[in-house]
Amino acid sequence: MAAPRPTRRALFAIPLIAAAGPALAAPPRIVTVLGDSITAGYGLPAAQALPAQLHLALTRLGVPNVVRAAGVSGDTTAGGLARVDFSVRKDTDVAVVALGANDLLQGLDPKRTRANLDGILKKLQARRIGVVLTGVTAPVEIGGGYARDFNAIFPALARAHRVPLYANLLDGVARNPALNQNDGIHPNARGAAIIAGKLAPVVAKALAARA
Image (tube, rainbow, N blue to C red):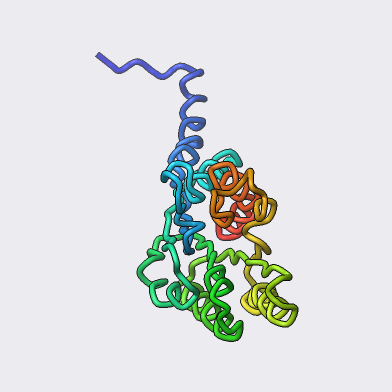
């Protein structure tokens, strides 16, 4: 017996299904957050830490994503430079570089901080991994000259490497007791959510640029 001929409706449905297939199968974009205790989620369960919150914020923007946490508490830019090659895996689409806070707390030479971050960006770009650089703002109490030199690091590097800059990782959260843990330094879950919500559009734009 001959097989039944497809109906007119079925003939029209076939290309529609075929067209929808690639969109449904689109793989998630990989984001790695290279940082210190803030990005490691110090004092928070993993589900409330910044990487998990960034994943949720990107998802709300319609970006299928996997966010990998590569934060190490206490890490300086020197530590990040030493481990960037193995902490940021080769399938990463965009790395968020969120280092410098511990350099600031330790009063390290801004020239050395800039050189370390420059090295990190060069390594990532040599591997064709996109970058979003996040800055840290030095408080005025630390001294005008040091604060000026430190704060200049991040926009200068963003211009030199032509990467997007999120100027202050703690924007809207720093010094707000309601958004920080008892130490006054590390964001609580609400603070991490605010950071993620502000950072996500910058990361989404960087991912789109690499599509």
